[in-house]
Image 1 (cartoon, rainbow, N blue to C red):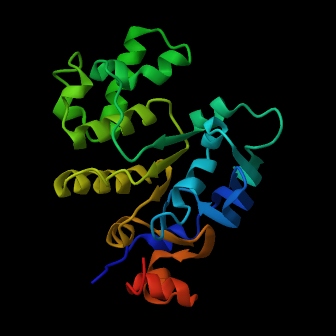
Image 2 (cartoon, rainbow, N blue to C red):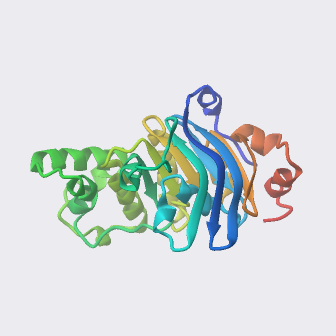
Image 3 (cartoon, rainbow, N blue to C red):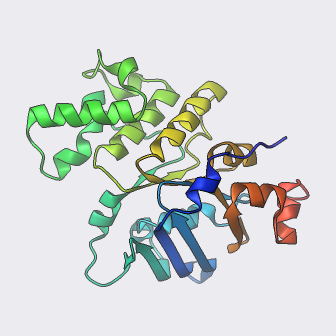
Length: 264
């Protein structure tokens, strides 16, 4: 039985934070995302679901211009952050990724200390004050629900942490640059059930201050943590709505078939 998030109704009244309009993404001649339109309300969790290879990760990476770094990738259409097109001329993609952070499928800590991992972003952006960096480190680790576990070993290698701790460290590293939106591409798929539960609890806390968009292969996870759910199939955005409506009263037969396990 899938139980949907009870907080989603309050999120439905929130202002739009992030919006994709007529978004098309190509890898060379391959048309990976076809004319997608999606509005993400502020301070909510939006889950992207669908079978493997349907375009979920391709779509989410367009939301902070990650495809700028992908050879042969081309993005057409608009992505609006607070109404401003992040693909407009003169917009610095580095600044966009400062405002829209990303956490990847597998934990990717740097081969540095825990402290250096967390403050890497602020230091890149020019922060040199040691006291300020320590404050950022503590705040970010607390925000990632990791401070109590690592506060006495900040000078130890991040590679010594468990997989679940490493993923929360990567979330702390994202929080350290004070983003407005956090994108997560299957952040718990490589974790055990206990670590997955901690990450899910963390996501529920994060939406109080941030807007979260998460790709997940697990419909149960989407139902547990998201306020809104969007279903992708073969590069098309088929349907979006409150998580409750998608899982109990989908409007499109293809969504119903996927939710009920007829394919995917």
